[in-house]
Structures are given as structure tokens and as C-alpha cells.
Image 1 (tube, rainbow, N blue to C red):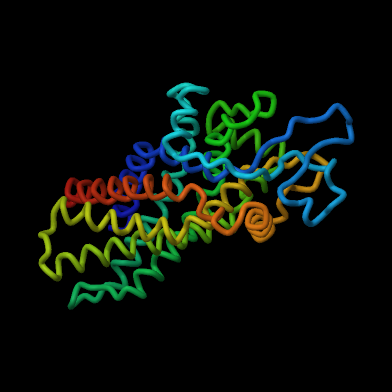
Image 2: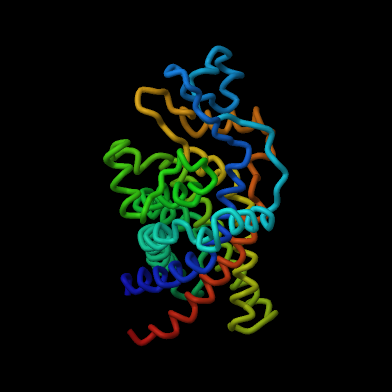
Length: 323
């Protein structure tokens, strides 16, 4: 019975992840707005100029390659159109192989564990589970799932962001396998867990807010007799869960994207020392609302993703109910 939850959650997550991948890619590109890669200068001493780092290290102008610039006010539709015009329609699915692997590792784990905890913590008499227990189950399941899926998450962010770099600076990963193997060889195995603390924190928040709120919304709708248990209820509860998850996780998601995407040159200090350093530099250079950069595509993606996820999950459960 326990393994069934993993299978159901895995199938639903892969379907949802692939169908909303272009929206996720646009979100990543928007979250990286404000970071601009300066072309290298002829001097061998010149390497990079890093984010707001000048505010902390005035003399470091010749020691970094990524700089913060005033973020252009470009919306998700414009970003999507530019991607298609400059890189082709196929670019909207850059990194989709990493999405499949990520959903297979991360979402399968979190959905399966949440289902197990839900079964164990549901009151057998009332068939209900307190909201606090749902949130706790989500935090635990999300944290473990993120730790398992972090390598695929790093690869996905990099593959999605690659097209925004100048041709000479692109990584040009052929697939998620190529990305992970090259990262391990060139940057060390530990690079596969870069930003893992952020990934774990984000996953705990998104799983707790998404799964717990979906169950809560669904139970509320059925309890009050607003709708019967069917597609309408599933879609309504899913959209509510997606909105809650987007609001809660967007700031962590922005920082996670930037830390995972940063380029670390051999012998050079990394652009960001960690999550807090990235957050401070981002806010100082771009303002507090930079943490909600990409929110429109986030909610535009989180809504459809959550709807497809739970509607698919409910259908898969019906198909596998006899197994």
C-alpha cells in the first residue's frame, strides 16, 4: 500500500512537470533578470565583477564575472516571445530531461512519503487529519524528497538558464546525464548539492503549503457541500493550493535559482558565499521586491502545475484502486 502512493505521485508529478515546463523555464529566466554576465577583458587578471559585491568589496571590480544591473521590466509573455525568437520553440523545453529526472526523484519521494504519513496520522474514526499534522507531514516529505532530487534540480536550473548566456559562456549540456556527469568532473561531486539547503527549505515549504492546503481546501468544499467530490472540486482545491504555494515559496525560489546557476571559476571565490549572502546582495542591488521576481510566471506555472498534478493524481488513484 505504501509503494502505491509513490507510483501514483510519481506518475502525476511527471505529467504535471512536463506539461508546465515552458512556464517554469520562463520563471527561471525572469528570476535571473538583474544578473548580467560581463564579457571578459583581455587582461588575464580580469575575471568577474560580482553582484552588488562592490558594495561590500570596493576594490573587487577586477575579480568577478557576473554583475547586478538595474533589472529590466520585462513580463513573462515578452520573455517567452524573446526565447522563441532568439532560440527557437524547442528552447521552451530546454532541460525537460532534467525535469523528468527531478520529478522522478524529488516528487515521487515527497508524494509517497506524504501519503504514508497521511495514512498513519489520519484519525481512523473521523477519517480526518488536523491541519498541523498535514503541514508537518509536508515538511518532512518535502525535505527528504529535495535531498534526493537536488542533483537533477541543479541540472534543470542550469539547462533552463543556459540560453540567456553569451554563446561563449554557455555550458551546452546535451542532457541531464551529461550535465550531472560534467558537473561532478569539473566542479566536484559536492556541486551536485549546491544550494541544497535552499532546495530542502523550499521543498519543505512547497510540499507543506501545496499538499496540506489541497487536502484542507478539498475537505472544506466537501464538508460545506459546495460541490461533490469530482473534477470541479479537484480543480478548485488545486488552484487554491497552487496560489498558497507560490506566495510562500517565491522568495526562496529566487535565491535558490541564483545560487544554483552561479558560475564558480577555478581558483576564484564563488559569486555568492551562500543563501544569506545571495539574499542580501540581491535585495541591496535590486530592492526587496526582487525576491518576488518571476512571481507572475510562478503563479502562472504553479496554478496549472498543481491542477494537473492533483487532477492526474485523482485519476491515477481511480485506475489503480484495485491494485
